[in-house]
Length: 517
Ligand code: TRP
Ligand code: ZN
Image (tube, rainbow, N blue to C red; front, side, top):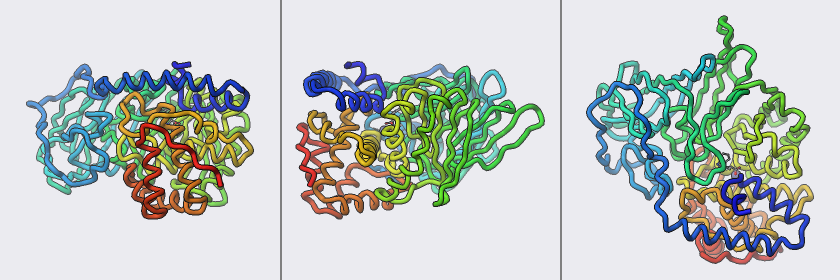
């Protein structure tokens, strides 16, 4: 059972306990024992140093090199440092959980990613359009493995070197503060998914399978397939162009804007996401997918892509999407993106993931009795996590707690058991200062969900819905921190409500859930 908590998908853990809760009388003792184990291991973990996995050196590949990076602290460059209490250098945005992740000195405006999957290995070219926020002699991007063949800045060749997962570029002339440039990176190889040591149930990043490819990056895998400022704080627009042999389907975020026959047996498809997206939520998939597109009355485009071999196991599970969206819109405010859909890959993934506008599922969830709860969970992430993204990775409960609350709400609304009452019996760890390998532990989901349920019971349905909607409209398209939420609750429901919520987040002992009145 302990393994279940550490390595299995949170969604499946929730589902497993949901099944347990709905059928067994001895649940309390069993879960209590489990919790004791989790608490001990967590206490041990906190004495260990943070996993340095994101800065592990990698083999340096061929390159045009120059004499060393300018690694000095660029000083206070302004911008948004909410939640970023870690060390800030050009090659590290200062995330407290993942030292070395992301970069500073610039903002990415857009990524234009071209992937050619017609050969033995991936051949790729990504244009990163960025704006300098200070005078810059070096530009750091995150990129894992891959062979970099060429870097150009505004079409002029630039020198570059690799250091671990940093791609360090020397512009031919230094960038000036506020200047925008196009950084083109040409690279190839077979993307290597990484074990980020972050408690996520999977090797992260671009996955190459016998049947095709897909992407599962949260939290640190995006740089396995494109050079990125890989942190949720730097959202950008995405264009993803994928060339595949004719007959292979390509599915990406946003909407398909073009499909071009290259007259050489290959086809290039272009997917454009018109709303800002954090790097960890960007995805694309190729393979024998059955793509169906529908436009809801509201104008929202729903396109699902189910691998043909997964059609039977998927059944009619996706038919509830429109009703779920309508219910969530009533509670959370308008669905935030131009499209939605589910990608079902022919793998027993053991998890689901909320890739922006295209939630990822395997064959092992949708046909089961907890399929609808997990569909609701991933859909809710489009509001909470994707539209409003975490300021730092240890704000992850703002993703998982909100999605869990929404999942519970949908389940109860459709006649299922009340998971909040069940979860409230289990004492759980606080939600702050998480080490890397505890980001996706069950307490983040359940105590996070309970924190919101407690708030709802305290302030009432009306005020609670207003808080959620204000959260989306104030921070949508951007990021927010735990502090931002506490401040919003103070503003809309008073300081007692905010103090109580703060106990749910920070207190070593878990507060009691108020009665549902
Ligand atoms: N965010 C996912 C969920 O709660 C869980 C998750 C985190 C995940 N990292 C992942 C799933 C990596 C797959 C791969 O639904
Ligand atoms: Zn989730």
